[in-house]
Image (tube, rainbow, N blue to C red):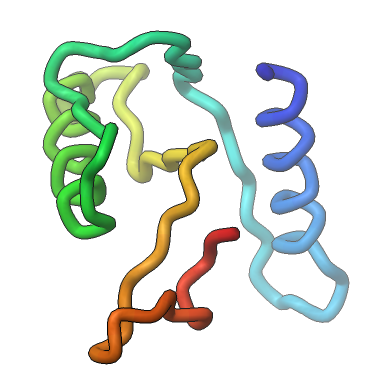
Length: 100
């Protein structure tokens, strides 16, 4: 799993360093947590997309060290095996949101 995540981040790094972009970005992995079981404070099963988003934001914020720490991060990214999507007003899967 760690190799898969790092491969995805390498691809993103390549995109952001494309020659036509004037500003180059450097992606640095400060911390990588791979959860194989439920984590306290992070409840995802049978949840809506908005609930998952709110829960993840709160959870990662509680794990983030103070801003003056070398281990502090600017952005957190959640990769999930869940089929995350919103529903349209007709209760259909919204194809505009990334997901399966």
